[in-house]
Image 1 (spheres, rainbow, N blue to C red):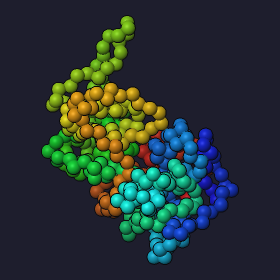
Image 2 (tube, helix red, strand yellow):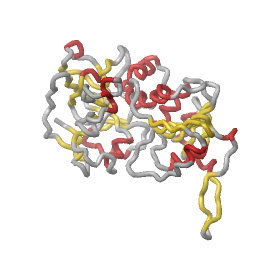
Image 3 (cartoon, one colour):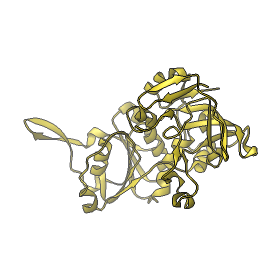
Image 4 (tube, rainbow, N blue to C red):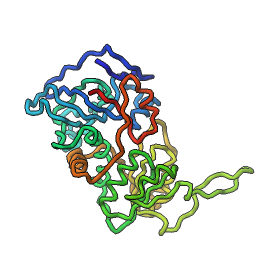
Length: 329
């Protein structure tokens, strides 16, 4: 079987791996399309230092064998987190936080392969008429939808999304559906142009001033009025400095939703959070059913995936396209 295998230090294309055998309660999936996520790139930088196995977690595939016979032959997408099924988190609807969970492409074999296995209850059937090329966006779109699951936004308020990349684009489309007064903040004028149907746009440099220091002019965030700040700030830049900007532009008693995951640590003046009574919400995986519904109804729209053969994985990982991925068909 062809697969992209991570050995703990580097990724390697292989053709000698066995087709996995589904255990009780699992399904065997023939992968059709699989997308590269920023998290996959972070794994190569050390985000999951203990992981060894097949990479990838965004996929659409066809069920080849299953503990649920009615799924065989169906087009499916799947959730990432497979819990133990017994602990308090699993019993209370928080399987994705199970302390013994297995996460595809991060702690168990993922979807950058011709076949993969997954717990059957984590599969979602793709609606009739929704092609694989669009259904493959279900997982990252679900992650964007988690924002509105966690934070009930006042549609009369304003909100900002920090980040002009793939995740930011999905978050912006989801927030635009709520009716909030939305602004997207990013580094790249060319990328920001695609956000204009959904939001106002600003360059992150608009929030930078300069202060003298040690004989040099150092960058610093300029002071903002309350009217210039935002009730809700979604940090989706994928970079540590994105949180600095979020802290600068959120209103007192406002909310920051943190979507970025990256290797490394972040220094933070923690006193600013209680003094300004800021709510910080960590946000990760989200609901697949609503994501598939939005895709099927055409209420969200994303550029086509730039597809590669798996052996050309380095080109896919280095691609500047909105999304790059692998075609196993």
